[in-house]
Image (tube, rainbow, N blue to C red; front, side):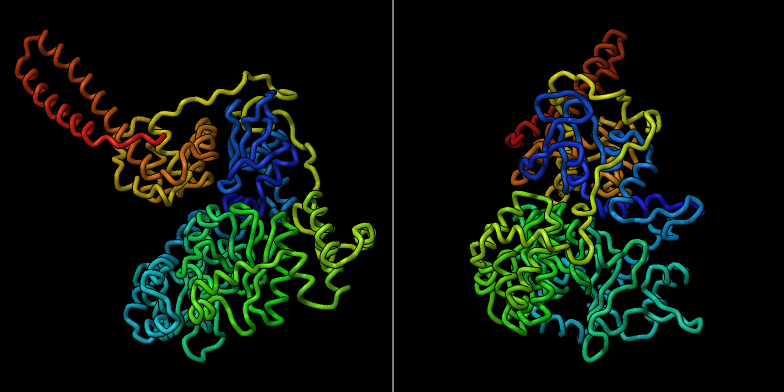
Length: 607
């Protein structure tokens, strides 16, 4: 059976950091939410090469090259798609199976089928919650509001042995499919529901697609929390609960809040901390850190103040710093958690606690073991931090707070080896080695020859109104969701823009580069990356710009239709066809009235 390249590519790219990879070839500097540098594919003096870590795309506004991390490696290393995946997989620790085996055993069509089953199960649980007084009372006692229940699509799995299984069978699902979706189990040829008598929490990927479930027992049922079994689409070590709802807030607030579990995350969200995420019953992993790094450079860790909470916070901070981010930690009063703290003491008290978060050095020196143990733990973190400026800053801070000479600290660090495994992308990283052949890459990524091409100083092409509207949606899909209701796709003239909007609105594609590029022609990819890599408008004025560009498109179409009518009327008059002339005049009057209405309701321009 052939390899499922889509699943393989998704896993490799989920583990990779496009900024980290491209930084091995290009000196990048942070510029707002993106990174900029001199393009490696043509000679230039003014940086026009842009990398967007949130969208995981790059684009050069000088030579027009763009795409995802694999497209960059294909062009830079002059290798084909599979060779680029091998290079990237080696870096992030993914084993590529032989070509004659199936990756994960889940081809794309099967994966889509499983997602449909998971959505059907989610809808079933939501309905069951409305029918269960016990479940609703439990959520009410936990202080979870109806709005929050709706936002997180919380549900209830009834106590019946196979209630969900029978429901899915009535929907036409096969036994094998429901089992592979991890919503039922089988024993002695009898199928039974995985979740029974539990409050249900849909677990979504970053794009909002449900990939698994978590269930919280009501009463004394054990275990208290139960997650779906891992599948090709769901890996606990790489999934953060609530990320799909938190990612935009994380970008805006420029930090993420990390809590322990579902209820903590949901309560924080309800009280206004919408940049909150939680791991799924596992320790915070390096893959979790890499996912968060796409959205922020800073994490606030909020955990219990007991011994287990202290240990978990220290591990999380170490992982965060090892992966090139900064962290602060807050320990709540022993025995408390964000959920109980907020419900008992309120948002103002919680704000005060968060303000007292301690950075790495102070936190390690004030918690945990003896002084020498704390120093050794800090040393191990310092040794795998590649950023020399950050490392020097931390050493100076440690010297000040521990009253130890910085020279002595530096000497002592030379004798300390990192504990455990070095982080991906830090101690284990190495520059790529050119392995491909000049002619081994697809032609649509350009024919470079040896060395950078000489290209004139870049001048950004002025985008059409339709392209800007698409860029708004791709850069701010949540803020620009009103486009779906306000835009008549039939009014679009640009074939690519029309195809992409149609695919998204009909749910054949998500507003991500991966999803849309799969439906796009090769020559469309550079334009697509150019529309996604950097917003052309301010996030604060999305709605105003949506109104402006939809209005501009409508007005353009009316003006174009009026010009066509003039031509048709002149021809009809020359031919003496006055019935047609009268018909065209009536149509013209309707268009003029429409134009007058558009001009009367013209929004202010914000672009």
